[in-house]
Image 1 (cartoon, rainbow over the protein chains, first blue to last red):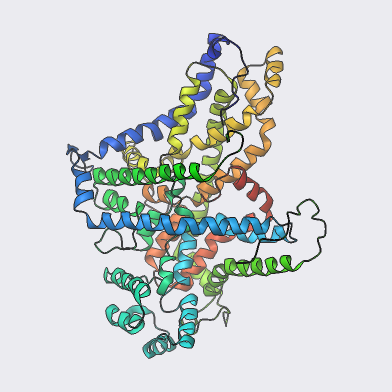
Image 2: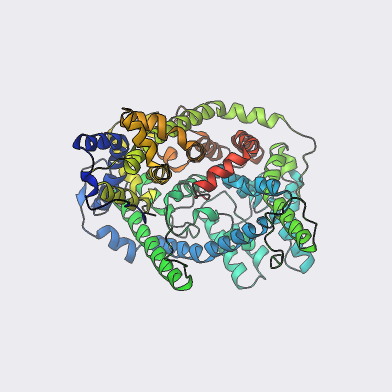
Length: 317
Length: 290
């Protein structure tokens, strides 16, 4: 990006203007720089420092060294799960997303008619509020009454997989809301008893999440992995994009932070730590570990990319 | 899906290409994809117009019968969505204005003026692009509390009024504008500020338009930060309001879907009308998935 900067000669750049212009430049920079310093630069350093402290905001902060990190990496089971989930999403969703994106881009680039129309539709999700999207998808994938579950069940009926038990149809006829659910484990057996490996594991996770006291139902079957993986939040490069999902999930699905919160993925964890239990230090530590995690991932990936992709002519961007 | 292999790039002769089999297949696949894209919206709309017993029938239907408009009335009465709209609008407009102002000034300095430490400082700016928001969020939250800005518009607006990314984008664009223009203006006695205001900014229409849409959309849809710093209806924006609504009416799907429609409809309408601008904005800033 900064390739062809210097069109100039031997004089050092900054000397070629009068000193008063320098001050002018600083003045121009001031508003942005002040904000940058106060809301970005200092917080980065502060957050790193904070991760070595224990601080509840009420009592004075106490220096604890690497205790927060040690705890996270050695004894915190939820954190381990969360790390794994993050990893899992990176290796599954990102490639899929790239593949589909590329396929779509190529398809739309064939000089088709009606391009405008397709673009209108395929871009629509970009402008939607993620909260609304999440809500709609929760309902879309709703365990008992979601339209997708219905499709899955229909499919199941045709292919010999278990269909919804009689009780369900009964309940729906009465139009009751889901307050009188059968025991989740019971339900699990009913629905997934015969299903092999992965699907059962998936269902099992659903059930365990429910036992965590959730009222919200997630998708059935393989779909349960999709319901929370808003793919565009999973860019592995950790750019500022990810400011949306975590708290969203916290407020929409109250399954974070508890043991067995198997859906929770990385950014989800530091929030309850920081804002529900007022453990600022731990929250900061989580943020840093995950940042480093993502950073390493990106780094490795860029390295690999250098090996796979050959750029003609020096390849500057 | 489809075999995208054939069909050479025909963009240039795009007038009226004969419908080849390849194109037909492609159309079929794209239409199928479009249906999949629209289905959630349709499901949302349908549910928002159903009565509770209709919602819980099996198998589910995409057509509400009878259509229950009252859901919308109930929704608006249950939650002050009008207030949320105003809040969102106020925050988004302020953030967009401020961010473009501060960023364009800084970008002007980085791209058009020479000063000691320019490259180094710019590098520092760039370096922070890598850092995800959640790393800085906790200190920012503490700062906001310290300033007693919690649950005020200051907290929603001020920390987001600066953007490294916008500085970067604008600087790149500014550098593409011929330097001769600056120098001519300077010859005529224009100050740097005047050059910024009357030469550079007017020549940056496209990038500013794109950035405006991008920033506005980002701010309008932002969820995490507003969630963390707002604590009453007076400051809640649409996404936060909707999430609150979700918290309180958690199985009333007809109302929740009506709320979602209310939250999405205006943005979708504006998007449909100004589609081209939106797509330009999002692609020009090159960070579509944000």
